[in-house]
Each structure stands twice: as C-alpha cells, then as structure tokens.
Image 1 (spheres, rainbow, N blue to C red):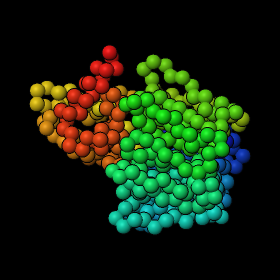
Image 2 (cartoon, rainbow, N blue to C red):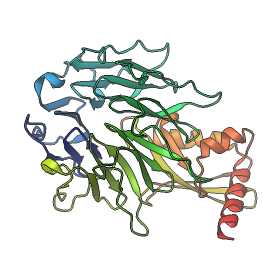
Image 3 (tube, one colour):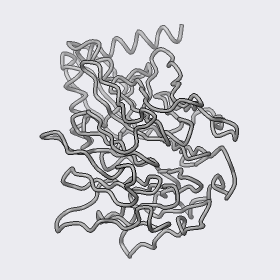
Image 4 (cartoon, one colour):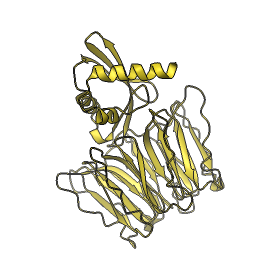
Length: 387
C-alpha cells in the first residue's frame, strides 16, 4: 500500500517491510525495525509523523512525538486493526470495534464520538484538524474543527450506505455503496468538484489531500481535481493492460499504486517525496486489502442453461473465487456470499461487473434480480459497447 503525507511518502512491500522517502526533519522516515517473524500490514503517513501497524496487532510510530507518536497501550487480549496519522494526531481502531486517539486535540479531533448501538468502527481517516470515521452500519461520524463545513456529512439516500471515507485539510470525501462520491467542506480550489462518471463506471476509492482529491474508478483509471500549480493532479498515464489499484493524496503530491506492483508519483518534488524507492529484491509494492478496508473484485458471469458460473478476480487479474450457482439465485444473496467467502464486511466489498457497474448498484436498482438477470444485463451492456 502507499500513503502520502505532508512532505513524505510511506510504502508497504510484499514482504511486509515498509520504506519511506521525503522530508525526515523529525524522523518521520526512520521507520522502526521489525522483530524477527513480524511484518507490517498497514502504514499511514501524517504531517510530520508516521504510524505503522504490525502483524501482531500492535502499532508503532516515528516522527514528531507531539504529533501522536505516543500510541495508547492495549488492554490484554486486544489488538489494533487500523491506523490513521493526521496532521498532529493519530487515530487507531481496536479489535473490539472502538477507536482511540492520541496527539494534539486543540480542535477536538481526538474526541471520538460514541458508537451507535450494535455498530463498530471499520475505517478512519485523520486529517489536520478533524477526524472522519466509518461505522459498520454504513453511517459516518466526524469530530474536530468544522469551520468550513467538513463535519457536515451529507445524509444518505434511502438504500445506500457509506463505504469509504477520506479527510483532507478542510474537506472530506465519502464514497457510497452505489459508487457515487459526495463531499463536504472547503472547495476553494475545486477539491470537492467530483467529475461525473461515464455510464457503467463507479468510484471505488477516494483520497483527500491538502487542497486536492484523487479518485480511483472501477475501470482502473484514476482522476484528480483541485489545486494543481505543482502538477499534483497530473496523474501519469497507464500503459495498456495496467490499472491503478490504490491512490493516496498528500499535501502537495499524489502517489498511485499500479496493478503491476509499481508505484508512481506526481506533484511537488521537494524533499524527494516523489522519488519512490525501488522495492527490495523479489519484492513489489502491494495494496492493503486487509483489516476491513475495501476489497475490490471483478466479477465475470457465464450462463449455461439454467446455471451461472461466477469468477471473481482481483484488480491484478488473479482469480480468487469460483463457483457455479442456479440462475434463479438472488443477485444480492450472491453479493453477500462473496463477502462471506472473502471474509470481508459487506460494506467493504466492491464487486465490479464486466460493464463497469457495481454489483451492489445493480442490485439496488433491480432488487428482485437473479443471477441470470445479472448475466444477461452484462452481456447486453458488453454487446452495446462492442457495437
């Protein structure tokens, strides 16, 4: 995975080691060494600090100590499941579904809201002066400074959930289960002006930076809006057959992970924050699809009489799930089956149909649809495209 911070970048390799580049005036790039047999499973770059999650469920940090490097100790039997480094604070999700925060709290950015009954926190995004958290029921809460409206989370349409949150300097970007993106907060540079999607496409990830926003689409392309005087929105073009699988917006730069394991960057190059290190021997950079983060899969459907074959692949094209089912099976129940098999929360699963539409969106529009209906829809859509 990749994480763009204030003036540095942190990356996770396939061997579980982490590397960093960019400004290191507070030691934010001096990543703590790992004990034998351990690896890093998530990294998060803040303004002047870095927070890393280890495979044993403990978190470590480096950089400016007052910025949230004093990680709260865990109770016995508890682990951390996700970390997010903000401007001068850090927020961590625990295995019991609660969140804790440390660091500067001048604006209340560490005053984590109480959970809704029966819910847990499944994703968090810490910014300079505010924090946005996603609950397991698809609702979003926020705390901290809201002077520009960044805490005014838009209400959801009936039948939709929030599936992804990202907080920028004074704006927030939220992804819904129908593949649409909504925003709130400061929009001085166009960072909240989300581009309309082509028919059949969906947004599957978003990252809010200082004054720009980067978005990942279901077709593997990325786009960016907002401040661009340093080229942070001039995303590198992709070669044929390659897609983007993760994006991260920093203060004045953007970092993108490709399906071939390479990482590219654009934007302000001071402190060499865009000089991505070559991964170690036999390594590549890889995306974070653990810890409740969104899992994005591509689904192919092949109808054979009254049966349908379903093949799920990751964004790199690797097959991860295969099964045959009666064509009369519910499309929505099949969506839930994929979530169970992949051991991921339903809110964090994005299944992309061959025409680029999200399966969840198709089911929302066609609540009584069967697998045969979904298969016919995809065949018709692809026939129109090829024609």
